Amino acid sequence: MLTFDFITLAARGVSSGIAIFRPLYWLFGKCMEGLLIAFNGHYFIALIIFTILTRAVLFPINLRQQRTMAKTNRIQPKIQKIQKKYNVNSIQDPRQKQKANQQMQQEMQELYAREGHNPMNMGCGPMAFQMVFLMGIIGIIYYPIQYILNIGIVTRTADYTQKIAELINFKATTRGSYLQLEIIRNIANYKETLIANNDQLGGIFTDSAIAKIEAFKESLNIFGIDMTATPSLKGGGIIILIPILCLLTSLLSSVMSTLIQKKTNPAMSQQGPQMMLMMLMMPVFSAWFSLQVPAAVGFYWIISNIIATLQQLVTNKFFPPRKNIAREMIENTIERRAREKSIKNINE
Image (cartoon, rainbow, N blue to C red):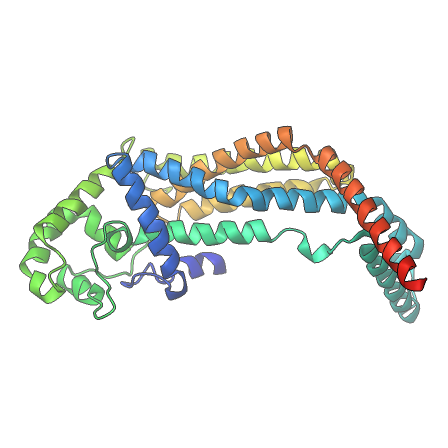
């Protein structure tokens, strides 16, 4: 809930987004603008290509995470041996338990040092980058007039959002209410008001600007789904396919990832219900999230899940986990021998 509130905090108002992410909105907006020009205004194609490009940027990070997991899996038997040696959970006396735990942690740290492994690098990086990219996507979906169409609702010298909201009687109090999406969705009803009061709005709503908004509105209708609308379980209609496909594609990606990880870490198979719960968390969250935001966000998530699944298949084929483990063993042996040689030279 906190994550969702953070993402939609500014969007439900009349601003141009969370300030810290505005450079990212601008960058992503320029990319989408270029893709729309290249593909003659076809939003569907532009968003697919944009998603492929973002996944390509994340690919090296995902590959690095896989290698980090391979290194962890390689030393897992040694970690389990240390844990079994001290068997901290079986000790009843608090002082003895604390002492054993400290000794175990000390031996763990020595193991990590010998193996050149840092457990803190276990892999929040890809998820963090994906969340940053998602914030950029949400920004250009919530604020397309500002960042894709380059109609300066907010500039360095003026912020016209509040004035526009008053002119069209917009109140961001209902679910799915976003000013720029509201303008696009109902441009036919608002354009006369915007043009008539254009002088008060810095002259930003010219005839050509209105024409750009109208053309953009047409491009946001994909397979009969209005991408500016927010799916609802009560509303029904074809738009309900968005959260359903979010759930299914995210589940497919999670299952694929779990199967690949089990190949290198058999211990995962013994986790049972815990593993099943972890595998279902992201799909359920993505389905719930897609019911809270415009359909275009869920549409991006669907494409991203499909591409992520294909990416996992390609990665598993050309960079198999077992091969990564073997590579890590070789590299670790070389590094260890180099350290031992350096120590020997110093002692001599």
